[in-house]
Image (tube, rainbow over all chains, first blue to last red; front, side, top):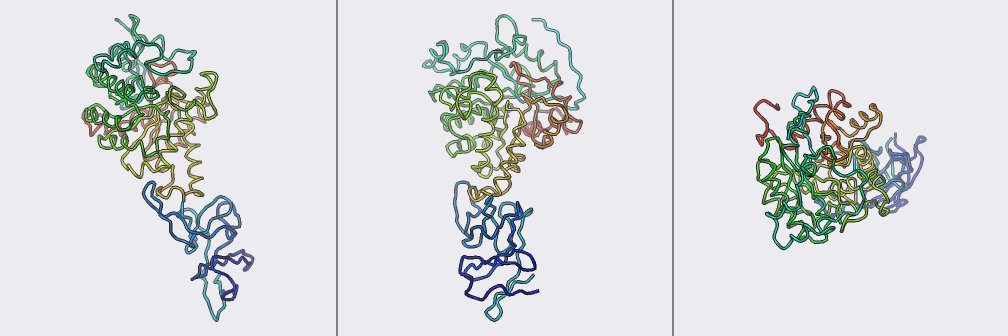
Length: 116
Length: 371
């Protein structure tokens, strides 16, 4: 099923619109290029994940080396700081164990559609 | 002198490796042949040889382990062999020495010279007396460059298996200024042993993080806080990413703190990974792969809880037996190993240590003794 969630231009770059689809709370985030639909529940303690910060992070490096990247691709839970990749929903620290559900998004006729 | 001992019976296939056996000097004067003349006055001046702060109501060394003739316990290898190795079927004992608290001394050159002299004494007076002795190289950590030189000086000796220093220090061991020590350990294929002691002494920070406790009882209850601090620092700062073959053992801190720290580190890593982007796996995975913990002074809850605790810390990989002979709070193999279920007993008594110290490839076990 496809659900219309917003019109193009309604969600500003770097921001997230939270809405309910079929009873599920979902955040639709615009990174400036693409839209991402993310389940608004952290898999850890069920905080409202999409009220957290969309940002970048430190990439894998050598000890005491700091490489900042993935700007706009990371969602940080407002409770315990768990980081998720907005594209895949995978936890950065433990991707084999934790992920948040992400949904396909399409833009049709200037409407943003989330596929459930 | 004639001594009689009753041998204890154990079901252990390979016997026991004791990972903490304290040999010591007969007197500080034993160091003189190995110590530059400039430092000799410090060997006889009260309070000058080693910095010590806290009164011990039970003396450090067991009175009954004294070899006689007024000599201190642990100072006569022939006596110690019968009194400890033969009595408990100890196959190998890693000599962890004494004077470890030189690392708390205010003078880094004196400290390094004492460590070197003590090592020479051990290599000359202990190693030749029995094949069962394995050696630690004592270092003073004030100056890591000097420590690395000492490791290189003795590190290729066939029976040197590890480097040892106190777990207490002025700065956390994960910091980069200690890299010369880790480089030298790796270069010489030696384990690094961090042994309790020196907390609050000399130049070191206080015994507890909130200051100095009044009694040795209070101190001894929280011995492991320094072990915890160092393990935490070494893992978080990425020492095992920088030195992937380094192994670090934590001696005389007991065990029960290890599951606590592993869980807490793994939990916090999920939220604060971005501060340590060099960690490529969970902190507990580095600990299980790179760190080992010796049993003494073992916690003594009821046995069911003790075994649960062993399981929680993956003792089949991480725990190694230690007596701490001849110190007052030592544990015997019979007391500790008989608490353990069959599947853990041999791992803890012998196999974990034999693997860590690479006894087979070092040709320190007889043919067929350890497959």
